[in-house]
Length: 401
Image (cartoon, rainbow, N blue to C red; front, side, top):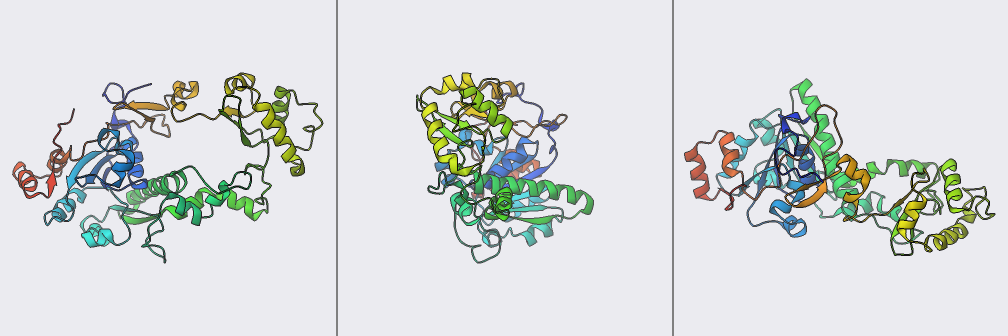
């Protein structure tokens, strides 16, 4: 597995498609940091404004070198409520292209960094706002988390297996997919627009709305009357489900298309079985077919079934744990995972033929780049010393490696 913690192991950041783009990120949790990570992976220079003492995010995901979402960023430790903080932030924003914030509506305004003020200082600034419910509406000021946003968007209910309790993988639907990824998409669009118009703008990204957008295909099925508890992709069909093996491991079985289903039955020796022959989409037969498949797959280990379906198009694959996925030959061949500061994590995606992204650096210590970023913004050594002495900013006690 490649290690991108050394310059020789990673691609030059100048080759990334967002090289030269400057981002100022106000530290938060979940989707905001993920958005900043996506931009940093693609070559953007991301200055992370963090407060000392850690946050709830550090309790959940760890801090310092272990905070994967902060990879490639440069940390400035700052007290945003300090009297000297406002002028400092505006100097950092003076030549920035993008601002990212993920506070509740009104917090940035109370701190003195609302969109109108910031755009007045830098009319080309793209002001990205990440919230659960959006900047307006009756729920705007309310708290929430990933499963809440997925629930209200209608998406969580689609996660019922066999009519059971609704659920979805944690943080993926609302936080990361509906939130951080949508904000990154909005920023990419706004970066193109500002090249033409010369004007920045505010992006109002709501996780609940993003979650709904991710589920556009399910709303499509709903409109067609096909999302009715007997849908081929909602775990109702025996040929689109997961099955437990003799060793307690699981398989993902998805031969939806008739030709794949026929090959699947052939591989299991069921091609001539009267239960399975024909009428793949006859839902009245599905419970019986599931029982048969459950019995069959429980008879052998996951490794056995991997060999049975090796080199076929039957759409049967092992359910890998997080600890197993990086070692799979497909991921190994493409370098889909990297090791950064001792932490195995997904590599930047998607892939570019001419301007590839890369993990630019390990996650920073809080305040690791305070002096560097202030100097780059034009602060003199005396000004930096004064800011440090006043407590407006602080620097990491441990030097950068």
